[in-house]
Length: 402
Image (cartoon, rainbow, N blue to C red; front, side, top):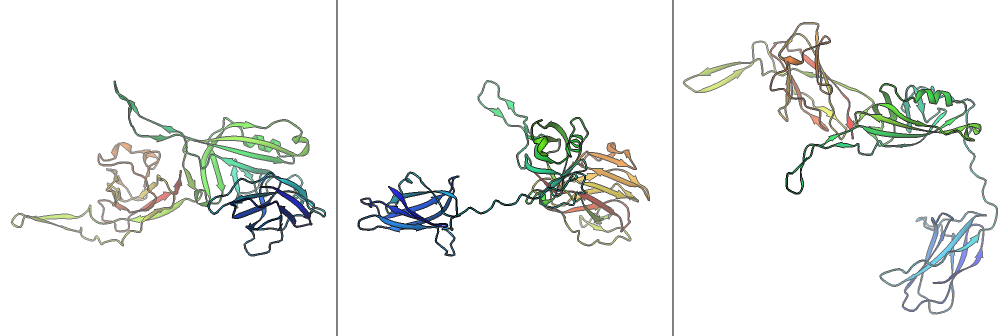
């Protein structure tokens, strides 16, 4: 298919199609920019004979398929032919320059003199913070790209080889740590502050970020710097220095930046007295004297897509407190009497049981198992052997994403 440029205006071009092909039933013409991106197109039905002119860049219909061209800009025109079922290839591109002067380039945003990096983090979209340094927003440290947040972490497999046979025995997989790469541009005279903030060999620090669609729009992780790269070149003179940082998170999950706190009321049951009638061979259970049924517990809701490990705080007086997931039957029971004004803390992530800071791990019952909050609603209740109807357990958790 042969196409030529007949005439050029400021915002449109007239292309001429050569003689029609035999058996062709339709023709397409398009204009592309220097990157190959189509900016205007049109189609033509079969004609009998002779060249056919097609104007592109003049369509103002609601479809917006044929945008006006930009004055003083280089474009290319192509054509193709097809039958009722398929198209042929696009022809060689023919270049042309629209008339007029191109519009002025967009004005670069003004950089504040000595823009600070120690700016308070407010959770604005497309910003982050690490080591009290704001990344993006009004900071002098521009966040260009973040990779690794949505990548899957490494997997620690426990597969075993089959002896004298093909294949393996599939074991349970566990997630490893997460590696995050930050690409940034340090503006003005903030190189020293940026280098001080991202130093390898430091302890874990909070990395908070507000990227739409990731970790509910406001995420939180504990990370430390593993690598840092800042080339020494002419960019230092220009005041825009590239900086690349590798962060490592031992816990690969991304958590909500906001910690949830909910009080779960005690439900009766474990403190009931059982009566047995040998003649009827039936047993009945009555609530202990003074016990009243608590309101139906509201679920503990995790809005993430991965399991979350909560922290339970139980204030005395309680005896043998038990945290139960009524849907799965999982429970954590500690065989201990917690006096008044003292607190028992159960951390399911670190798997610790503390009474006023002292370990009581050895007093967990044999039926206990460490269970997480799963995505969605979790029917968590609290039981104990006391008759204190006001007893409750505080649940603290962050929704988690992988």
